Length: 118
Length: 116
Image (tube, rainbow over all chains, first blue to last red):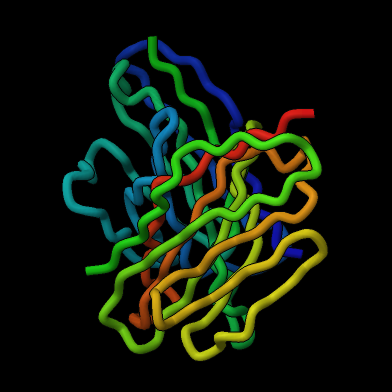
């Protein structure tokens, strides 16, 4: 299979604190991972593309200093929401594509992280 | 620019009914890939199918079937004999030919409710 683990599943924090979310590909290597944000009853909005060993590519309108992405290994990408505020409360979900030929470039998704900033 | 339209927003059926979820896409790429994902209430997106633009053969997997019509730019998804466990939000998505790392364009999703 292709399992993507995302942790934590839920986090509640005070305004002004930073929150780190981890995304791991458990049984495959992933040079590329993606971070999405989803508001209630809405579609997924791509925030950034995370590339192992290089800087992430952010979508227009996403603050790179606010949402720090680190992809230090072929199986782990992290998203840090810095100085979180209530408007950052949302559902964050990551995905990973399996490296190698024949992988069919399918994005496999984690279970998501529900962030609530008080 | 790429676009995915899921015109239906919410569908409610009674168990055992068949239901079709529509997906229409726009792209200028000659090679592209279409996907369907299921998002149950728990939140994770479950991959259902990937279809490339050169393969118009319809596919059946158990109660699920997909109808790819390039002439109408549609990739519809039918659930036969629906079950309560099919209740979820279903997303259709499109990826162009820019490479494996190119992003997915998602539709807005269709909320399917299957009543006992």
